[in-house]
Image 1 (cartoon, rainbow, N blue to C red):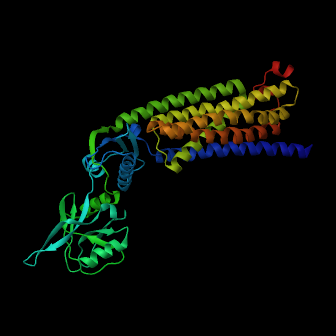
Image 2: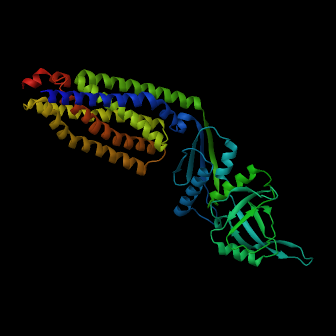
Image 3: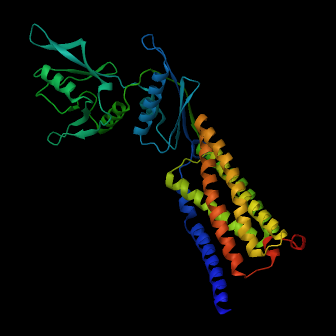
Length: 427
């Protein structure tokens, strides 16, 4: 009897340890984790840019060219160091760029949409011995360069420079060999940038450009980012540019959070009234679910948008639904004459298949939305799929483990504490 009593109290202590860990982690770190989650444009405010991909007589629009333009814009935005941007193709020939935060709008519009048309030309010698550009002799363009240009300073002269690295080192070696002792002419967007004289043959494909407007670190950094983004295959026309105020996004966030808090409070109250102690265990699992969602979003730096926040609140309902299915299966086992502890074990096993099937179908729907959707639809789908996975962990594993521990402890062994009325027991 003493050993059995010790085991029961040991299980109850283990149950209390679960409760302490859940409440301790939630109270101690949730606020810091929540503040580290990046907010989307609709919550944080920022800049919404819409560009039209324009065809040219020489280059009509093709699907591969459109994809290349989209990739170039993505690379260009990423080179700016913007946190969690959203870039989507709309209507087949429009690119929408959403940047959350505060930015220099004019500068970002220029860097994202302007084609960095870098071209290198050879030189031809004049009768008087001077040289001039040979515009018929295109030696290289921005497409021939690697995407790793950066601003550097000459350690001896302190001159600002931008590094250039050719994709094919032999191409640069042939250029420097052909024009050894002669100038080459580097143009950016039709404007002469620099005309260095080749001093030696360079076989490693590395070089630098300087001079012209490259007098400040800022100018060099801007050029390096443009070069790294690559040459856009088509010109981009800025169709619309809109700033979203942070106050509007903040108000939307507060309204959504209030609605979510009210919904969660009602769910908690519903579970307590209907299932009593079992409902309390379900509510603790929901607290763990919400905490793990915040932890996952913070760790993966998932951008939180209004649709995504709505998906997370929807996930609360799905998570509690798994508990309701389990508890109703437990009632069925009690009706069949089993003891309370046996009913808890059997009810959990019987409910598992139904819970997995229900969540799997919803997850598939989320995956389809992510695959075919754009923008906010994808944000909703990501939040929905993450919430499903996390709710499975909390509702199936955590809630189940806590319920079994508490039932086997025998601290409250009357069926009423598990939402089982007298009618159910008598039947």
